[in-house]
Image (cartoon, rainbow, N blue to C red; front, side, top):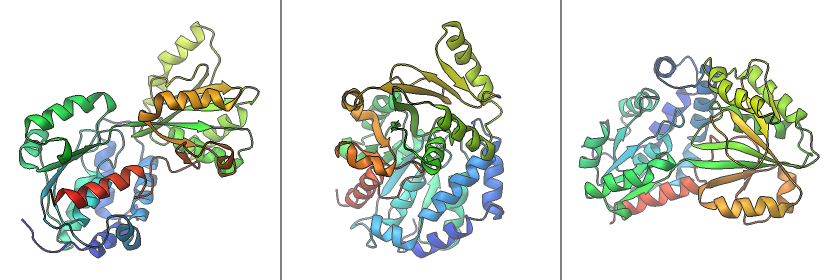
Length: 353
């Protein structure tokens, strides 16, 4: 095991190089990811990589995890789901920065990006010990686990951890979450563009899925549909997206339910009750008459809810207890958001348990 002190400076240097699309390790990892079984596009991968790498500054790392390694180094495993291409990056960075050894497992959907980044950081002599293994080996060797499972898989993963001697205080499981948008009709072009990004960046999926737009009963969806179409002009849909949405479009037509979609079926919007529609890429436009309707839905779904996206000027009119965020960046949050703070706390404390 590498016992050198972690060097955040080396990690930051590598992140700066990874902001360049033609940086060879990044370019090769993106090409391999595009060949993997997923529905991500080159444009989405480049955007996500650029944004995440911009997050990795020395100031941000120090303010997030701190600049002092944990009291005792241990081996922390990272089980990364397939909900977005850089799943596990924030976990890995936190583990390294805290001075632990990192034991990772990557999904079939994104086999190359995180390992390639890890390899280059290691080559810079950053004092960060890392290895990628199969899940069974990870659970046998790790003394603590960070994971981003699908919500339906949380209980099964918890049981597997328990069977390998990893009790509740040695694991941090952060399942996929939901995001909703709260509209009032006063969103400007930037706000509508940010909502389009949050809805469509990962083909309507992602670890934090925005698929429910609450809107005043008399609000026309046309400006928001136009923003989605403009977004698709910059970030074209994956070639499989129209086929994935076709069956749901046919269902809506057969039941004469209100719907709208891009000419090439790059996204699908239906009007109706506040439900999370399937498949990813299908968005629900749900009318409301007053805030009590939205508040009741939030109360009933709070455990699964990551954020309520609303234009900044609307925040003061909404309950302070709602997890409010401005449009754009839902899929690439600050390092120290609620999930990030939990990760930082876990890796700091796990060495002393």
